[in-house]
Amino acid sequence: MTTRPTPSPSRLAGRRIGILMENDFVEEEISYYRRRFAEEGAEVVLLTRLWGQSHLSFNGAEFRAPVTVSDDLEALDYTQLSRFSALVVPSGQVSDRLRYSEDVEQPAPAVELMRRAFRLPNLVKAFSCHGLLLVSAAPELIRGREVTCHNNLVGDVRNMGGNYTNQDVVVDRDLVTSRTVAECHLLARSVIDLLAPPATGAALAGPAAGGTA
Image (cartoon, rainbow, N blue to C red; front, side, top):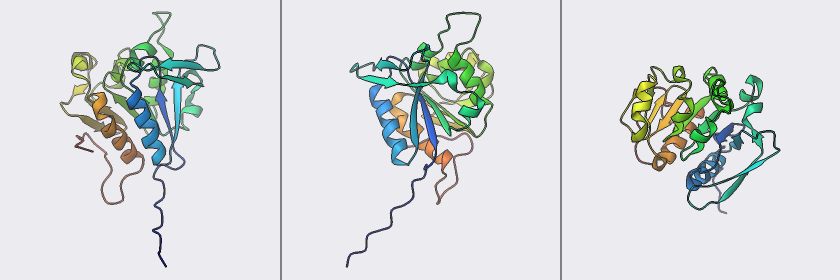
């Protein structure tokens, strides 16, 4: 009689991970996050500014593949936000579009969301490539923090007071940043390890560089 191995428990069972969305996202990146986090048992929620609509559809940057989003980031007060374990700001034009405010004297709702998120140390914040553009209007959020980003954003990050680190992925406590979309697998792995540290090793708890997958 063949004995089947006991399946290992899902590392992120019961966890919720939010991914911010807008037009001109990188299709392969979003697809990877949704699949990878789900593989670990997490619930993946796509979030955007719905502008009073019940849902909005966005198109990817390369293949124009549509994705419909029905969860409104403006609805995430502290109570709702505390139900998430991580927020991911992806590559592409997502962060630039979400930082738009129709009133230049008022911060964009997504920026206010980030301010709330950074007040919750148990909530992992992850930014891919150009994602840190979203917090350019709130530089205090990354001032003094170890981060990486796309080469085109290094000057902006330094002007925001961030400590740019020339690595593919950097983990600074509850903050994860990656250099480009090509490192999305490293960003996802870092988020997973922060939420469920590997049994055989220490959790990623300080500034650290990622290697190959």
